Length: 377
Image (tube, rainbow, N blue to C red; front, side, top):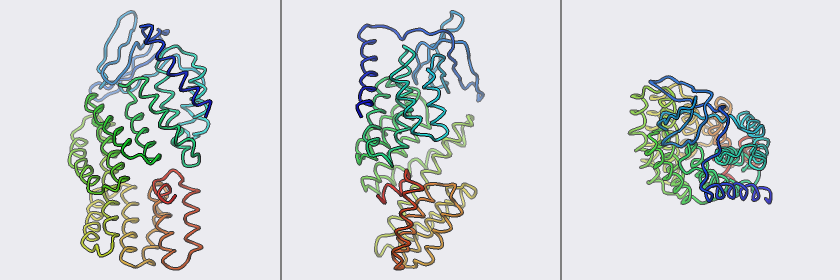
């Protein structure tokens, strides 16, 4: 904890000192690169010096000529003066080694190797994401995560990484049991997405908002948000010439559909909720018809069918569905985790307390970062 506090203190001191002196970001040798999207195709400019970068504008110098790019067109900035520890941490995060990634990003923040301020937002973003992955097994990481994402946000309030930063902050606040703070982060991301002309950020913000409302047990509010997402996101995805944007919006629509499914199932699980159960069954059928080949939709449908059978009192038939979801849809971790949690309930109702406990142990061991595991805890 002392080391983490020292890391953030050093980062804050660096940012404050540079601002107090009225200095611009130090210039680097021409080793940066900027990738933009032009008429649906990616174009990368290499051998440049990026003087400033945010979601409104990116200013760069190439062969002594300064150019200002619209931030909405910028896909990625790569920094030529990235320290070795930073690059190693990025690689570790991509391969799923959260512990090595966290150590690497902390080292990059302490031994920066560059005087430019980009390291503060990018290394803190990576550190926050690594800590999020560690949080299910490390209670201390949960508390640190929100502070680290806040440090990334403060380093550049208009960061090109605002979606990662603010979504990470929202998730960290949910883990800390602070859904109202998560709502604030989601609202900030929605505003940033609108200003930055990035509809994928706006869609992600609304999904985070729905999750936070769900955590507050405001099911009606969460359903309203999800219905709004499902009204505009698919149409925007279908009309986009940007393949990556269309993919992200399509994925957001699927996630909104799956979360709506589980809100409807939750309503159906209340005593005497026959009408709600029928509404949930109808929505599951519509979901599978609309996305017949989507793995997450298929997995959610099997789990939801099992949950509705369980609510109707048929624990044996429900258990078969949950076993199917766990085995056949292991490639959808959230639904495989949900299947294990429901298996525990089904075994309990069938009087097999040993297997009920075994399912919960398997859930905690195999899918510790899942929403199902968190709620089971």
